[in-house]
Image 1: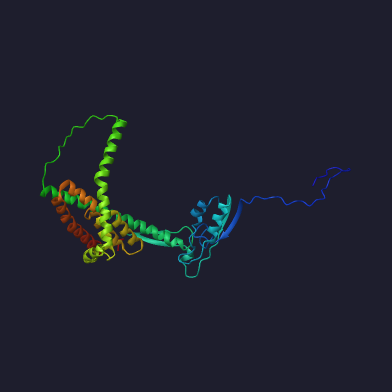
Image 2 (image 1 turned 90 degrees about the horizontal axis):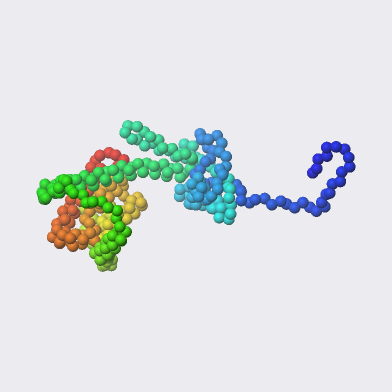
Length: 343
């Protein structure tokens, strides 16, 4: 509407039509609801929590959580997460999210997960940044990561120690000609592309002719043994040793039997048992050390036969099997006797 600053006669045109509703952008909106985690005001936390600007669903998942059910085992769909995904998939650009959270009676203090982890006489307390049941899982995973690191150190230490021990004993029992301390180094030249291509093709040809048939043979033996139900018989024979000396559950028998035929399949079987909570921390360490030192898979065994002959291959297998069980049994006894994070 014009502003008149001086007296006089003014002519103003006024439209008789109804004023149309102006268009407004729909690329910006705001949501409020329940999420897995994320910034929110709670007792003992921040005094205020303004809605967070989110510009993509990837950012939403990072800040507020995924599409999985809200609350562990609650079965409640994550309505807000689904709405946010639909908003961005339909062209939305700017989304303001305000999380809603109310602690239930009996929850952890103020609904925030925390866990005290003793280490070397001191206690470190891990605390979730925001309240919510998912914080319990995240804090527990932090402790599991620390325990896993210690287990890896134990596994690596045992394997390296066995290598050094066996090498030292072999040098004493089966002495051979040592290598020269000073070696003449050949002249170093820039490699030619043609030479690299020729050597690469030669190595590929050798692998296809020598190694691949052995892997195929090992897989075929595994298939036939499974069809003839021979794997079950081998598992029953291995159960007393695994459950007795090694302290492992009977389900690990199949993993070790398959591990002889295909080492990667055996490790995958142990991983599946651990993921479903069938292996304790001690059993995980013992099983991984045992399968690492176990008899080489059947393809490698055939390669040893091809290079060294049947007698040497059988002698190697006859030494490795009882020695591996001895190391695994000793490690199991030590870990169960000595207190630590694996208990």
